[in-house]
Length: 134
Image (cartoon, rainbow, N blue to C red; front, side):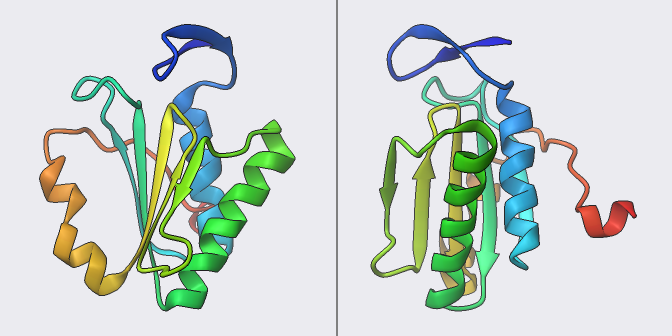
């Protein structure tokens, strides 16, 4: 499927952004992330299609979650993030894959910034953890 690369204004062949977001959520679930949310922000912003938001229990856990997402998308799609921010402090790590932006927070930081409230008009994407599907 062809989707728009919002940063460059060109079309690229890739997996649909919702499918990429679900792959991200699967990787986060595998590493025991809490409160995984997928927000479809495509109609609200022009820079991305989906925010994936998750919580880690510590700096080390947040880093491990970010690494798991990075490793999973490299292995499944050959994709690396366009940019990564916050990995040193690991209070809030942002992985920007273009059409999908991943936010991995520690609990207090997630509550403070409250992206789900900020982007409250964004519909949530359906995603079921593999552990609940079985």
